[in-house]
Image (cartoon, rainbow, N blue to C red; front, side, top):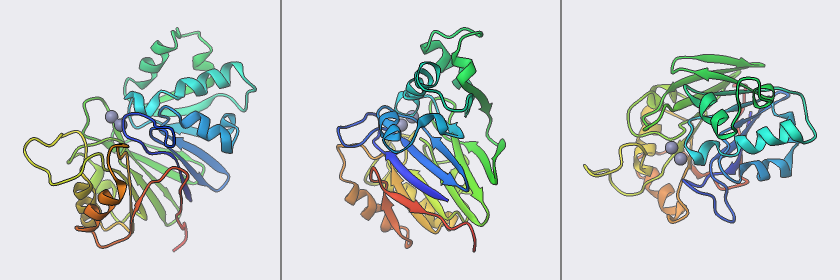
Length: 253
Ligand SMILES: [Zn+2]
Ligand SMILES: [Zn+2]
């Protein structure tokens, strides 16, 4: 299994780094996790977006889903690949994005994007990948997503504060791709809907993950500091999800 970072910026894209978007490849499948602003262009540089096997949306904040609308118009009005593309998102995601596209029930939107809304505790199979969903702590319905392929596993936090299902879902994961929107020590005034780098490190240590990849770091913060802070509480390898970076996850052990 291979993880490719298309974008990892929190909240908004920058010139060099789109907002959240990740490619996950296994066997002959390629799926997109999140589609923030800028992600579609970066995706189109490396593959025909119409050939995606599925899209997974952690939640419907703009920085994680806006480019699903770019994918929609590409599929509907551009050179189409196999259609429709399955889209797995949290409760309400279908109507939320369809409303922006002004798409009624018989609109082409629903012919090219086949939404399947998921609850925490849900599961789907994409080829040999067992994909499970958990609850994230966020102001809108939001999912933690775990891919298990053979003996390899990838857990993506989406946006979440402390609590929820992330820690248990990350148990023994090969790679934990965790948001680390904040730096410093958590205090009573720290935002409860996002994690600090130390939160992510503590979670990785508790869950016994093999590698921690920090993402969703705002352009205003130095990711080197985030990596250092996570490393102060977690002894395994810690990486920054730099745009364009890839992480190989062995599926045999
Ligand atoms: Zn976000
Ligand atoms: Zn969010």
